[in-house]
Amino acid sequence: MAVDELQAIIQRCQILEEADFKGEDFSLFQVAGQKCLEDGYAAQLLEVIQNEKNKVIIKNMGWNLISPLVRCIFMYKQEDDKREHCLKILDQLAQLCNPKELFLGLLEQIEQASGEQACQTVMLLLQPLQTVLLKLQNKKAYSLGLSLAMIMNQLTPLPVPYTKQQIQEDKLGLCQCCNAVVDFTKPFVNEVIKNMEKSSEYNDMELKEELLKFCMKCLKYPLLTAQLEQLEGIEEHPFRHFATEIIVKLIPLVFLRHKSISPHWKNQEFADIERKNSADSLACLSYLMFVQHFGIDCFPMVFSPSYLLQCNMTHIEVLLKSCLLRMEDNSLLHQYLELRDFINVPQDLVKVMTLCPIEHLRKKSLHILQLFIDKFDTEGKYTLFRIMASLNLLRYLVIKDCESDNQTGVWTTLAKIEQNFLKPLHVGLNMSKAHYEAEIKNKKENRREAHSSNTVCSVTVSGEKMPAMTTEMQLQVLHSALFTFDLIESVLARVEELIEVKIKAVMDENS
Image (cartoon, rainbow, N blue to C red):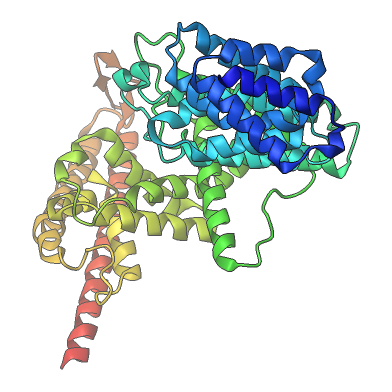
């Protein structure tokens, strides 16, 4: 009988000194303990573990029971007494076993879990893992970093629930698991915050940086792709709660740290991967804070709006690129441009390209705009050149984008642009100028015949009467409009000149 075999091994080991335990004793204890679990004698095994006389044996050998113990916990149903006994055994092992050995045993179980059992295994072992880590001294920071990296490696392959139904079902347990992992880190975060200003010991610095690395990974997964809008019918959105917890932790750690978190890789490929991951994480942090307003109350209010804009331009680039690079060129239908955001984004990019005083930001905006335009079909590309500040944009693209490169597609749609945009614009400008010039002539003639030079006209906008305008004021407005038309005409002439020069250059090369 399994219990008798276990008792025989226990009695033999009780009379031995700790240093006299042999490899055979460890193997026999593991086999007998596993058999007790598999045969349904978890209650008897629990009694053996709780017996004070067996304290030294359990300290040295108990960690060997972790693997069969985890298997049995998942085998029994939730309400089964045997499962409850197994959970108590797990708790006792966390209290009694050698922390170093048990730590490795727990980590091995997390590493072996995959697929549907990944989240369940992680959540099962978080509490004993936390207990063990808090007992470690010299290797606490390293061990915590190893644990968090292993946990994230197991979670990252899982799909992030996105729809309301997926979030509510939480089929794989990811929503619940993410928040459980945050709770798992709280004692270590509290330790860092408590000692941050009092101590600069290297171990404290290491612990802080391991936690910061974890927060950065969480920003990339699951938060970068998570649905974070408040959903009707979900009282506490799991990912909104997770985001709040991460940022409330991250802000103090970021702004009170004393050195860079980026490791110094000798291998350039590893260094590039690290930079890419950090860029994605910081872009997500920027979005969560400045768009969703998570943790904004914790943000230091010493930075000027222009500085924040400059910093966030990099993050905006990362977010847009990460979306655009996943799509194939010419894959977006022009109907998407009926949505306001699809027009607002390129308009804002053009404003940065033309108005921003910082050169590298102007170049980044151009690069993103080129990517954005590439994703649309031919009609979409044409529409983008027309619903935007198209003339200035067209001038800019003609200057920057050579016909041989044609990165924006402007040269392949040039005939359509000339026929449907440039020529009608010419006609419209000529008609408008003729109309305004006639109006100016008419106003001047009427002024001579008027009873007074202070004759006024009234203007009504949306039913509200505006301040009266004298003839002089009307003439001033008309002249201002003519001046604007002249500016547009000069830009139009410059665009046509640039197109002609570039086409002629290509023809000369081909001849």
